[in-house]
Image 1: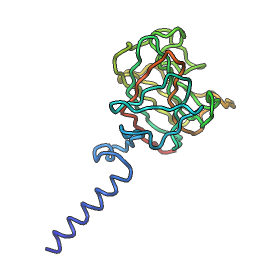
Image 2: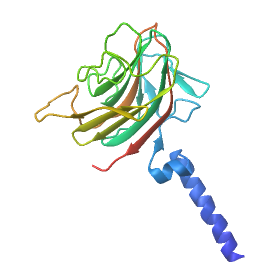
Image 3: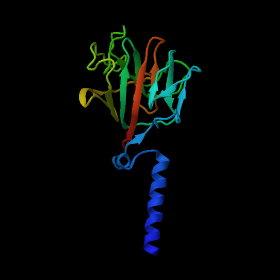
Length: 206
């Protein structure tokens, strides 16, 4: 009886501990942490007084310029996000950035754009690595996978590595300077609509 009670108590403690970090047991074993609970924007902060919404378990960009920042900061990591754009839409995913009530001046932006007029397309690091054609299509879900370790950035889409970037010596920033910071999602303009879900990070050792 005592052994049975101890087992129940141990399971309860494990269950409670898992609940505090908001990930499944499988994710926890692999080291992945969910940054979006699929219900609301707990852990995120929007800029410029714009309201962002969660619709059917997805973050949907509002019809007004804004950025949605994580409250947590990270340095070295693997970062995965499922993305979908509507035709003619432009958005972006930032990392190593800081909250600002306008366009972020620090960090990196990977582009989310298949058919909008900006020539820089998905897979690019804005202002640094420019891809002029997108490897994916509007109205279809795809997965960004970004790995940052030390001075190296690896960008993948749907498990295909697009490029590996090594930061040169002497980069001073603040833009395109590896450091640490928040993640952010961009709402670029009123005509753009992008959807995001399954937002996960796996912290890596320094």
